[in-house]
Amino acid sequence: MPVVMSHIPAGSSTKTVLHYGQEIKYNGKFQEYDYGTEGNIAKYGCETPPIYNLTNIDVPLYLIYSTNDYMTGPIDVVRLSKQVKNLFGMYLIPLKKFNHVDFLFGKDALQMVYNPLVEVLRNFTNEIAVKMN
Image (cartoon, rainbow, N blue to C red; front, side, top):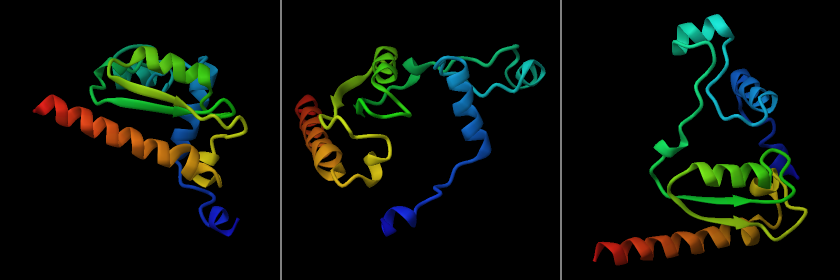
């Protein structure tokens, strides 16, 4: 517990928190920050903020998620997986009680997240090496 408490509160800007709130308000629409009509026109040249074009992400992505994550649930992860073009894979953490905070501070994080991630990185590195030869 002392380790966890030494990292709380973790840094975040007010704008980041507000932007997250906007995503909830707009039912998960992944868009730029909404400055209001006038602000959006000044910033983006249109009344509403543009949607992020996730197909512009060209690095391979591997999505790790859990069913008990209150910040990013399975529905959000599946939606994201369908919007990106270079999905290397997905991994659902098998521990049902694993949540958002557990990714950093959970006693099972090494076994549930980091060891599987190292294996994925090894496989990915091997796959790239084979393609290059």
